[in-house]
Length: 109
Image (tube, rainbow, N blue to C red; front, side, top):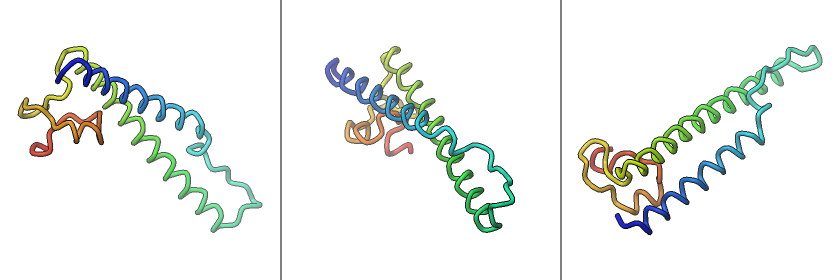
């Protein structure tokens, strides 16, 4: 992969990281503790607990994606970005366009 394409994917990774961090910072209270308030009915409390669990799962997925992005930056620094972690062959650029933090080619995935 040439230098211009590497710079392009570095920029894509930086933008993706920024978007995820902004989203995480915008909604920190969504995954907080559900207060047991007597004014909340049983169904409302169950709905609040379900929303909390969905927010926690989203946060977990975002944290995992940030780790994958961090690892992609490390691969960029080592000159290994765009190479499959299993077979060491180049990952198709179309796949990197969709998943710039991917580690494997389609065949190995």
